[in-house]
Amino acid sequence: MKNLRAIIRSKPVFQRRSRIISVAAMKFLRIAAGVPLLALAACAQQPMQPAEAQPEQPAAKAPAPVPRVVVRPNAKPLVLPNQEMSRQVLFKLLLAEIALQRGQNNIAVQSYLELARETKDPRIAQRATEVAWNSRALGAALEAAGIWLVADPESMQARQILAGLLVNQARLADAQPHLEKSLAADKENVGNNFLQLNTLLARHPDKPAVLQLTQNLAKPYPSLPEARYGVAQAASNAGQSELALTEIRAALKLRPEWEQAALFQGQLLQRTSNAEALAYFQGFLRSHPRAMDVRLNYARLLVTEKKYPEARGEFQVLLKEFPNNPDVTLAVALLSLQLSDYDAAETQLLHALETNYKDPDAVRLYLGQVNEERKRYDDALKWYGSVIDGEQYVLARSRYAGILAKQGKLTDARKYLQDSARNARQTVQFTQAEAQLLRDANDFRAAYDVLGRAVEKSPDSPELLYDQAMAAEKIDRIDVLESNLRKVIQIKPDYAHAYNALGYTLADRNTRLQEAYTLIEQALKLAPDDPFIMDSMGWVLYRMSQNDAALTFLRRAFELRPDAEIAAHLGEVLWVMGERDEARRIWNNALKDSPGNEALLVTVKKFSQ
Image (cartoon, rainbow, N blue to C red):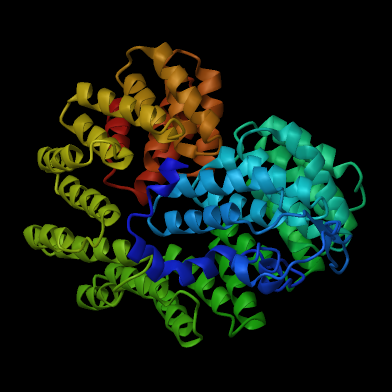
């Protein structure tokens, strides 16, 4: 208690704040049924009258305490413990709230947790849970939530929070009974609760365990489409594509018009075959022609497959069906931008602004990009410059600087970026953008130096370490590349591209191939659908003379992302396997889209001699 008292530094300060803090401390004691705060205060000990003023009273037997009962709609009455608002309890409440105001969260957590243990009051336990959670004291939050649920077994909020904390600490088996009861207790919303369950479990690293848990929770609901959808998502995340397809098809059989499920089925099919996904979307749209999101994804996939006339036809259908829907307008604009149809893109972007699209700065950013592509740099600068805050600010400023560099004003562009940062995060981002400008100008040494100075100031920034590693590779400082990337992996073990970059560098130099393979394998586990990591895996397998396996990965990577460097790798493997006509076709098509790609040009030259 001595340490707790230490935060109250002076009596005058305590007196000045006492009324404010008292209200804040006891505010949470009102429960959902609306128990008045004064009713709780009535339980506190009353001050004694002076001895001389007290009339003599005959001794009386103390009355038995009357339980306080709160009646709640749709739930059993809540019986509150016979806990008086003693001086000790009130002191700890005030102390905890004062500690929170002064930023001494550890003291607040300790005080509230002690109160929850002592009083077993669900209201105090709830507040203890909130304070511990907000202080990121997850162990204390878990204990407090457990006390809360024991004190109020009918509280679905307590049960759900306890389940979430158990999931957060990877205790899926302990969380299961709480999740089962939560689902069973809210039959009217069980479908939506299953969809929210996916969000709760999505970040858990043990995907097979999540799948098992989801299947267990879904067993009592075989005819609920959301339950089948949840299993499909968990199966997909666990790498069980066949099971995912089976479950999503079952969900759609139960609810044939469900657009969200149809989108997911199309995405699953797209993993193995764009043609199958196109055929499925087309069939779904025949039965449900107003399925806007499916039609948008169908149009995007047509663009990916370079079926431009069909894609434009879908744009027209969308605009006809939803002429004033800003989301549709923006989607069509972006598809038009992807097709280099800048007139159509600009028209639709301006229309999106007129129809009050929810993120106008994003529209302004795209209008800047349209004008930049058309080399109307003054107009592009106007649109980029109109983004003065928000999520698009950093990208808009970076592109503004990029135009200055294109106009031969590299010094002005660098100063513009250096003056744009408003916080530490933006400082990192604008440093990365400045280094990119220097790389684009082929001044790799200057890029390396800029990033080096930034790393000295922020030595534990994964982003800066990674970018400096990439700059180090360009000046043949492989020692710096390796040390930086290993530090990134240490700081952020789930940074897939750090493993990939180090593994690919080793593979590309045809050295330490087994180590390279292990690094890329780990990257692929962390990001199994990333085409660039698939490309790295194909490349290291090729270096290890496993050409058939290499070809499988490279074909899949190229299907997902027809990038010039992936084309270079795929063509090389095909060439050495005797498929030279296909190799030439892939290289020639890639050269049309990326005529200046260095890796592609080097590869084509090597095999054309």
